[in-house]
Length: 300
Image (cartoon, rainbow, N blue to C red; front, top):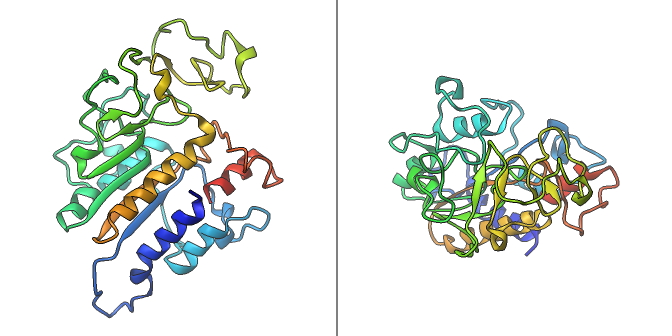
């Protein structure tokens, strides 16, 4: 499945809303596809003036939809910006909305009104695919059992998650309340304090790294990359960074296709541009302006 297919689906799903006159009553409730990205600047998209970096698919969405020229984020980092987006509340009004470790508890109160819960009450199917980074469970998560509360308790009907970030453990996907592809004979353990298990770390085994680690990214090595935090177990469930973009795009496409007959809201949070920035081989070197440009074009 190519990103082009997803963009065509997203554009087609949202087109009726984009082309309806402002004073006309819509024939149906518009579908909503919210693509949320990390580390993308104003000048990174062709529709905002980028010339060397090519983003034709995102440019097409902008041309057929709404292009913001005066928009503001509640924060410049992962967790607080997402908290503000989904709750409508300034993150500094709640303690603990700083950038979370990968084993943090859910920081949104399940009794709180959220964007997905409002849309669900309005009759929308609601889906969350991609980077989450708002915590899961009630603390000290058991990654080998049911993982909740999480997105499903906040108004989403379906979720397929990168639990925190690609540079943090655990390096596994979570679908609804369970880790995807987990072998129960190889349980996952996670620590953000002392090392656990005997897996090599970037700090002690730099010869095993395929990426030179940056500050703090020198704990457990997964897929040749040093991570923030320590983990052991769950080998059958661990992601391959090069495939992450394709994996989450397939899940987003499946959600759109499954809910094509009803209004839906898809919160699609990509990870391509966030570190560690490991493009799929078909994008590596394609931009001719470095790895960051490669992953930006991969996101497109």
